[in-house]
Every structure is written in structure tokens, then in C-alpha cells.
Amino acid sequence: MAGRTERVNARDLLDRADGIFFEGDVVRGWLSQLERRTRGAREAAKGNKYFETEWKGEYDELSSALQALSHAQEQLALFEEAVKKRS
Image (cartoon, rainbow, N blue to C red):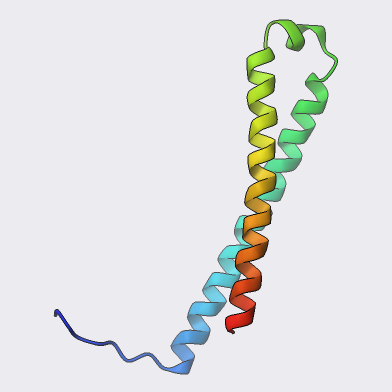
């Protein structure tokens, strides 16, 4: 129905906020695990002559992915702060 407004009560809003917080926790945990694994793989490759010569592109890509993960965590923290202020 076009133009229909939906009534939202406080309980609905709290349920939605709980969902956002839960999803944020899940995403934070996933990013943290991925960052640890990426950092570990990068550290293992660091100084390894084989990786420095044969897999330099992949090593650089892994380093870029690690930077992207760090940036994603920073953005998630900003999002969480914004949600907390609105709650």
C-alpha cells in the first residue's frame, strides 16, 4: 500500500536496536578473527625469501586487506557510537 504509515512502538524500536547491537558484535568478532589470521599470515610470510620473490603481489594484497580490515573496525566503532547516542 503506497502512502501507508507503519506504527512503531517503543518495543519494536528496542528490538531493532538489540538486533543492530547483536549484528555489530558479530561483525566485530568476525573482523577481529579475520584480522588476526591475516596478520599471522603476513608475519609468517615476512622475511621468507620465497614469498618476497614469488608471491610479492599476494603479500602486498594481504597487507592491503589488513589495512582495509583495520579501517572497517574503525568505521564499525564510529557506527556503534552513533547508535549508542541515539538509544
